Length: 165
Image 1 (cartoon, helix red, strand yellow):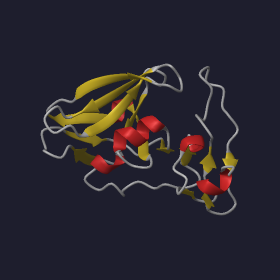
Image 2 (cartoon, rainbow, N blue to C red):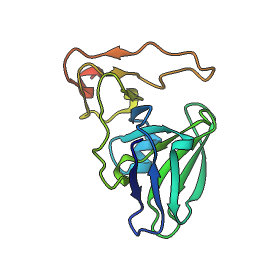
Image 3 (cartoon, rainbow, N blue to C red):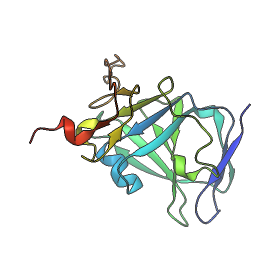
C-alpha cells in the first residue's frame, strides 16, 4: 500500500491516497487549462476507494463537460479555493487528483506504460509532447467507451509543428 498525502493551500482540507494511480492523464482541454491556470493538468487517476479525505470536507462544483456532455465534479476547499480532485459521471469508479496538491507532487511516475496526453487539438502551441507516450487529439475513448487509437511521437513534438499556418 502506497499512502501519499496532500491538501489545500490553507490546510483546512487534507487527503491521502491509499494506492498507486491506475494511470496518469495529462489533459490539455480548455476546462483543465482554466481550472489549473496553466497549459495543462497533470492528473493521476485513482480508484475512488483509494482516496480518503482526512481533514475537513471539500465543497463541490458541478460542471457539464463540453467534450462528453457528462458531469464533472470539482472538489475544492471552500476556505482557500484550492481544487483538490475531480469526480466523473462518465467514470464513477475513479477520481483524478490535481497533482500539484500532493505534499510531494513528483512521487508518481509518468511514462509510456501509464500515461497519456489528451485534447492536443487545443493544446498551447508551445507545449512539447514527449516521445513514446500515447497521445490523442480529443478524449482517449468515445462516450460509449469504445477506445480511440492513440498516436505516438517518435521524438519530442512541439504542438506548433502540428498546426497549419
